[in-house]
Image 1 (cartoon, one colour):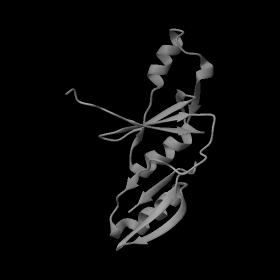
Image 2: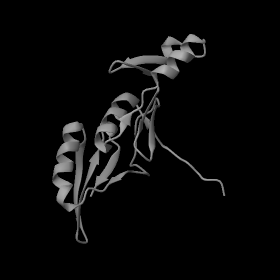
Image 3: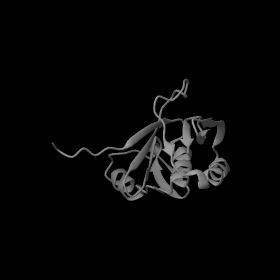
Image 4: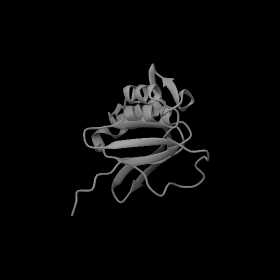
Length: 138
């Protein structure tokens, strides 16, 4: 079987804010596609209206990605907002000794606390990112 590669794509109202939050939360890097965008603009394959400058970097209006050593997460703009519970979420495994510090750091980055969970000997938190997508810290 051919190796399958994958990325996680997350719908968002503001892909740039989401990329900034999750890059900081996960220790990932925000991708810089400014050279690619410049080349496409120069050749007429893209329009200025398809782009914006975010934190000094030319970016796509509707897309922003972050990358870790093993994975890429793409945030794409969609017109509708989140309306129901996530069917998929991230678990950030920090261990019991790092739990409180991780929750504090993530809330300082813009997350909000949804719930504290003590279940079957396990202690964790459910947080929401700046757009309300839930994720667990355990």
